[in-house]
Length: 90
Image 1 (tube, rainbow, N blue to C red):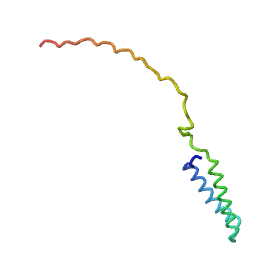
Image 2: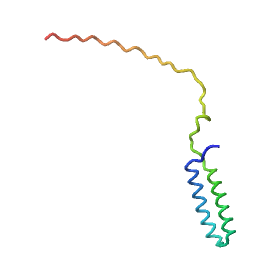
Image 3: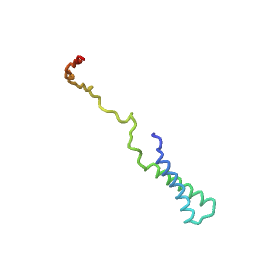
Image 4: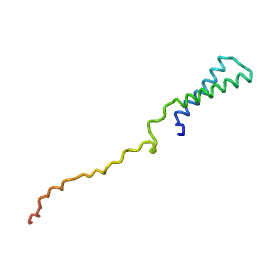
């Protein structure tokens, strides 16, 4: 199982925090059981959001294996000979 990315952790954590506050404010509950139910619901929602965030476009090397190919042999032409320069007599 691949490890979660930083984006997945961030989205999941933000979802848990904001959904907990929103549900507590909207429900107006003050009992321990109500708060526990809201906390569990927020955790489940955060887990769902973290798992549905697409992972990065990079694939692990074990998954993406290029097909074996023969090595490319490039032929480079020999450089043109330079004319010989003689020193001028002084």
